[in-house]
Amino acid sequence: MSTRTNIKLTHGETVVVLYRHHDGYPAETGADLVTRLRLAGQSVNAFLQGLLDARYDKASYEDEARRIYEITSAVHGDIDWAYAIEFDGQHMAIGAGEVKRGAVEDPYAFAMAVATHNQTSLERFVANVVNPAIAEQNARLEELKAKNPGSHWQDYGPTQLLQVEGA
Image 1 (cartoon, helix red, strand yellow):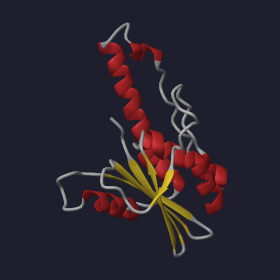
Image 2 (cartoon, rainbow, N blue to C red; image 1 turned 180 degrees about the vertical axis):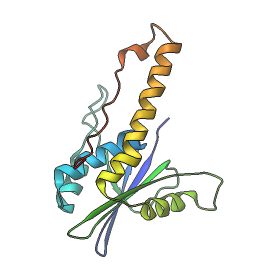
Image 3 (cartoon, rainbow, N blue to C red; image 1 turned 90 degrees about the vertical axis):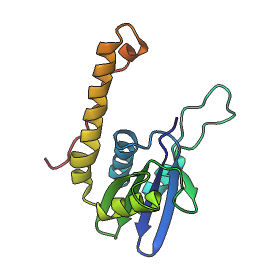
Image 4 (tube, one colour; image 1 turned 30 degrees about the vertical axis):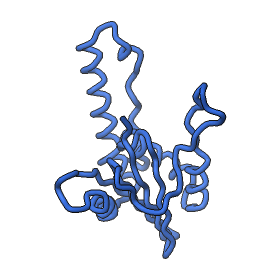
């Protein structure tokens, strides 16, 4: 099963919505967005191009590697996470919202509204969203290793926390 997500990029009056089919949770997509935002600096064009150039590893049955992020027309109705990123020319803000099905009439739009409302600096996003998600993922991995000795879980190591710049 996939953890799907949408990412809404806003720069002035321009809004671009992207879709990611796999690994939409903050420990993966949140960390990837942070890494790509840091590489792009304040350039929304460089950031968007980096997302559109990103590819999964090519599977043996594929002719070419699939894109990780795709431009889409609107927020999808099957996502699990939403991210909102806003560039204003001098500053950037990022936020995340988890879809809570059954809680509101349109949980997907609500998750995007939460992501937009929760926008914060990149470093606060790392400290308050991404790194806690990575720590939780690592704890779950250790739990699986302990409960399943000799299983494939033993092949996986912990994910490194992202550096909080300026700390």
